Image 1: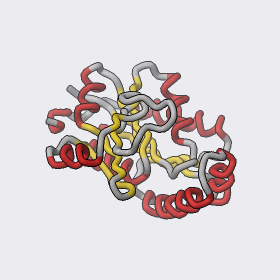
Image 2: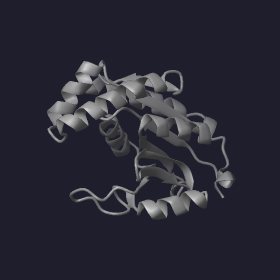
Image 3: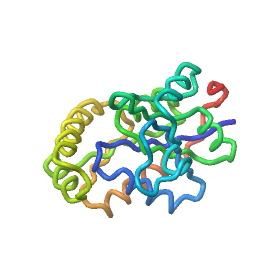
Image 4: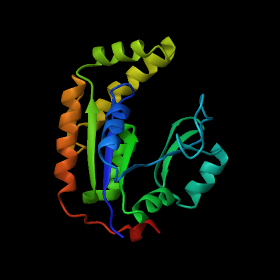
Length: 199
C-alpha cells in the first residue's frame, strides 16, 4: 500500500489550520490526520474528531509500544503525536494524508515519510504581525501570548532549511493560491513509499 502525505507546519497563529481547511474543501481525496493528545478536550471538541484524547499515562504506554510515527511532550505531561494506526486507516482508503502540526512535529514527519511527503512551513510576514494576530484572536492570556511568541521565534529558526517549501502568509488569497500550486505539483508525481514499515 503506497500513500502520499502533505505536512503543514507553522508557529501558532500563522494560519496553517486556515490553509489546511481550504485545501480539504478543494480535495475530497484528502483526509486530515487526527493527532493524539494527553490534554483534556476544550469546549465542543469530540474524541476522534479534534484529537484522540488519551491520558498521559496511556500515552507513555503507547510510546513504549512504538505506536507513534512521531510524538512530542510539548509541556510536562502534555503530549501530542501521530498514531501509526491513523496513518494506516487513511492510506487503506486510498486517501492522501494531510497534517496540521507544529514545526518540530513537521520536521519529524518529513524525516519519517521521506519523499512520500511534501512538507510546507507557513510563516508570518514578521513576528510583529504574528503578535497582532494572536492578540486579535482574543483567546489567550498575556502570559500565553508571550509564551507562543517566544516559541514562534525558536520555531522559525529551527524550521530554516528543514522543510521542502516555505510559504509566507501575508495576504490569505495569495497564500491559498500558492499552497494549491505547491500541492498540485506534488500530487502529479508518483507515490514512492510503501507503508509496510509502519507495522
